[in-house]
Image (cartoon, rainbow, N blue to C red; front, top):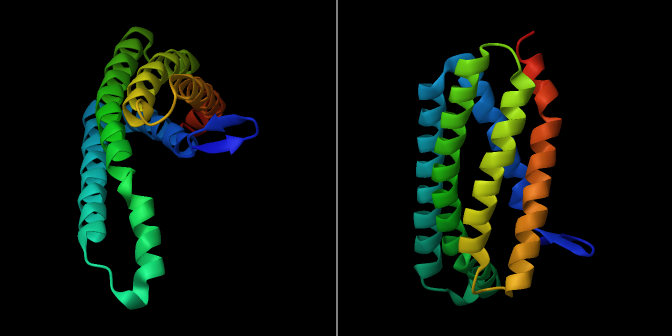
Length: 173
C-alpha cells in the first residue's frame, strides 16, 4: 500500500477507479455486450500477467544479475495473491456494475446519467472494496490496517467516480 501520511491506501486504487468510467462509457455508447467483452479482455490480461510473473520468478538466478533478479522476485512474489483477489473482485464487481447500470438506464432512459453513475459507483465500489481488500490483505496485515485500507480505498474510488461524471456528459458532445 501507498501512504499519504498518515493514511495508507492501495496505489492501484486510483487507476482502478478509472475502469468504472470506461465501463460506464462503453455501456452508454456501445451497450452491455461491449462492456462484458472488455471485462474478459481485462481478465485474460491479468491472467497473462500472473503466469508471466510466476515464470519469471521460477527461473534460475545468474550471478551477474543477482541484484536485479532479487528485486524482481521481491516485486512479483506477492503479486499472485493480489492479482487473484483483483481478478475475482473485478469480475464480480464489473458484472454487478454492468447489470445495475443497465437496469437503471432502462428505467431512466437517457436522463439522469449522474444518478446512474453515483448509484452504481457507491454500490459497486463497496462490493469491490470488501472483496478485494479482504482477499488481498487479510492474514498479511493486521485487521485494523485491512479495514483502514478498505475504507480509504472505497472513499478514493467513490471520489474519483464522482469527479469523472462530467467526462461522461462530455462524451455525448
